[in-house]
Length: 497
Image (cartoon, rainbow, N blue to C red; front, side, top):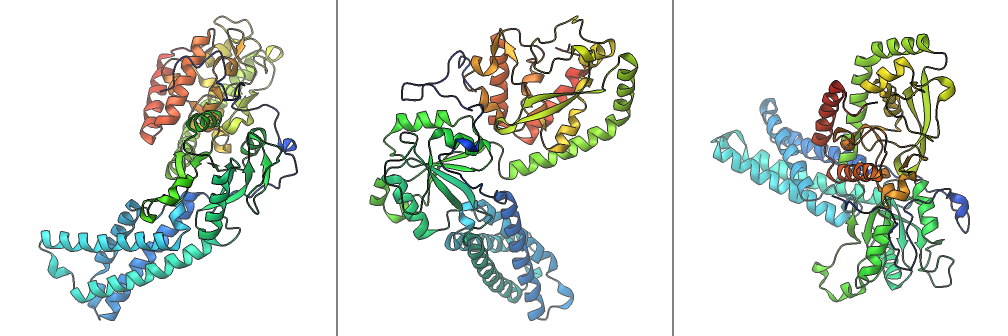
């Protein structure tokens, strides 16, 4: 849970200045030299899913081939083959056989996949003996399936590692090293020598000496300082930031982590130079994960499926009511049916949010210079009903289908919105951290009652606290809970204007 009083001032950056999580107006023109945009990688969850399917085919095919080789009648081990393949990938997944970094290294992924197969065979035999069904498993078939399965997994995983480790692999995540000390040089050398990190190094950022002046590891490009890193992240060009800093520099690492807290990137820490004195078995395989990207991996895939499923269902239910609302708006006052307003979304990027128009056309406020209050004369008769029932938000279903929004997430705000006369990012220092995920049609803050106009600074502080708590605690079950509570709040018309 974020601390309540992170308002009124930005955090210190450790150099006597303050940190602005997202810098308005920064673009690729701020780079010291032109930087070619790196093509986005395949999502790690998609790569893992493809390898998982390959494992299922390898183990399943081995089981069926074993049946044919031992001349079994009627493929009587088909069910056992399916169970063996399923258990193999399940145990392999638990052992990390589908971790992004492991998939780029032949040794670890082969070892974990074989361990998963061995565990599946042991469990299959134990369950069969426990249930008294051991006679249903032919020992010759099991031995042949185990041998063929191991061979198939070894061959498949060797091919996968070779494919993923090739230069320019689309599966490697785009990474930037932050820091220009010996840790950066050691990390670059290790990645070139060992490979298989699952990272594609774009260059080096030095926040203390952004314009150069020091040596950089061979072949590693100096990109600038934190301003340039911010621009690259906002342009969607960076997936991972690796801190190449001494582990003893706790204050500096903490300051950098605070400075990067508002960005939707994964943050890792490069191994310290002292790691060389540890036994090989005790050394970290690569950079240590400090902070994962919010709602990433399998969770991100689940979130996407959830968003489109809920949006399609909502559109099917609301299509006719939306047509009736559009007709009522046209009959009530002249002007367009929809109201488009610029809002700040994922990764601090602007987008146009869609709503039913609730004000007179000549009184619409695109810049949110004055928030709507109860009894506001600018609101039409139909608009008052729509606001009170929150039906004016229904067109945002199209924003979800377009990919600008999620069904559940922090509500998007207009850049100029104020609380007690101050912009939201002036009131809450880590306000931009809520943009690490897509904005939502509803959210945790809204079901807790923190919706509507922000008259006081306390209201926006509480709202941001709830937004950050949602990002930290996210799960599909939390989304379902919020949707159900939203429907209840709409039915009761709480906090609506």
